[in-house]
Length: 98
Ligand code: HBI
Image 1 (cartoon, rainbow, N blue to C red):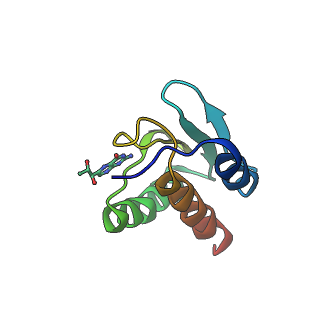
Image 2 (tube, rainbow, N blue to C red; image 1 turned 90 degrees about the vertical axis):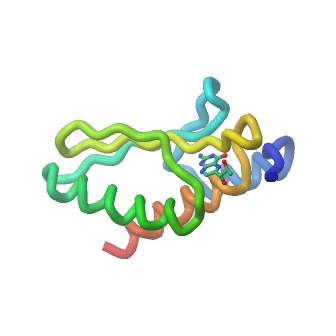
């Protein structure tokens, strides 16, 4: 079980993820990614899927052609948790490594 992030710990964690936007329903974070084409977008999704499987933490996401929208929230915690922060950080690192 994992705790929902609140207060100062939450603010501190979010400060490290400037490209992610907080959302209310569900309580979580969202980021939109745009690639040159579907092939690039789907390649990215494949890499995220491998991360998610390894972490046993799964995105809510959608894809339209070159665009990927990812929402991270922790169902077990009923909102944003450290697991979402870790996944967002790992996703950002995938992009930085390209
Ligand atoms: N993914 N986003 C998200 N939130 C969860 O709570 C979650 C998950 N993937 C797997 C998972 N929980 C399992 O660990 C538990 O449901 C057993």
